[in-house]
Length: 187
Image (cartoon, rainbow, N blue to C red; front, top):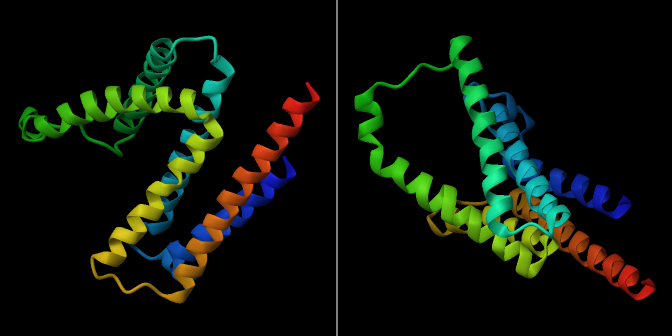
């Protein structure tokens, strides 16, 4: 637990270094970088909780876990959207707006929302949540590499933050494996 907490702190510092590019003022710029960054971090935290939570329901089928968590997730989204709309933060889209993105909605609902989550749960059942979380952290690293390949000039500060995050994630994964192995030997 101490190693995991330390790794989370180090990884967060690394992410902070990448997001700010060495300029803390970026977080408070007028383009809502701080809000977007907080939402991204909360989303990642939710995925970690969701992924590790699957291990608590190992006796459930993948279909059952996926279905029940989706029902609760959709219910939560409906409540949040209703509150945000009633407070005036969101407006109800018109039918023309919805039909304009119907292909994207179809993709997000069927492939990203159903097939991908089901496959994610199946994959975590096969490789364990510890490895699933490590794999999940490759997503922002991959995005970072693609951005660089697209011509973005990365600073040493950003590279240092990326390396710091990777070291924290891999170190935590290795430490968790050692603890799990020691516990299995004791049993």
